[in-house]
Image (cartoon, rainbow, N blue to C red; front, top):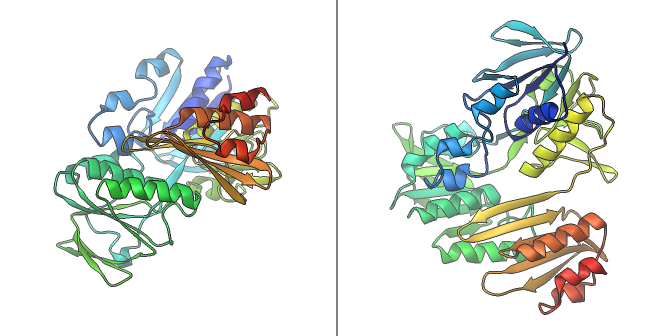
Length: 403
């Protein structure tokens, strides 16, 4: 009986094993996770879960009964030691186990501050797993003082939750503006105004020089402009790195993550990869997407291919972020944009449409689900509406889908 093994029990791993059974795979399935929890949702961690609005059980993607009923063996709270590609074995606690097909859905790891600038002090947190948020939660209380390092979506979401809990928040971004790497100035301006309106002190073009502490607990920060802050805790949101240590040790080809072909197969024929850890062909280049939808869709495609399919993965990038009462929805990838068209709605509703010449690339929609839905469908269909029509707030967006 064939044995399929999935290493990494996050969103991609959970989707992959479920798809195998859904498509009729009747061999052995083993899902291995380093954390001691059932596969769970990550997006609510720094929002609803930290705010106390979502209990742990509601975080689980599926109940334990699902894995039992579908004869999926779970090995949780265990690290895989190494993979022997030639022998088709892997080790746990030094014990070799065999596989026929193996998928790596190892996700990513948060970038941390160097110990040399105080990154190893108690009270310095990252936001990636349940243990991270559980460790941070006691500090996120009314009147506490927080420093958020990084003005990307991770940092901004952390700032929003902390501010809602009554924390005095200072956010520093060493680039000249927040969201500079991922969004247009218009989107940066929107979220800067949103956070300033909630009392967050945003300092752009300023980095962290040194964290200081007492008895190994962080107590302050010195910024690159020489200013000093008293802080009770720090949240580090300076990006993530694909988790490739296992793949590298196994001799797999790496390229901004684990390199896979269009079907999700690595340089070793019996090993596949999906989710945050995998880079794949896309529109003549190669990308790696850090999003829940990509983790699910790519994992399900890989599951079908592990069973003998020959399906190329067609990514349809979309993302979201929740901050205060604003829901940002992003369709497409804005890489290479030359122009941004603003469409203003009522209240906090707005959308920004990215064009490369005459070609629509992406849409950022804030509290505007219609703009997001229409933009997503237009991009997927390869349609690029007249920018003047988009910029006219009175125009009927849905009509564009019929043209």
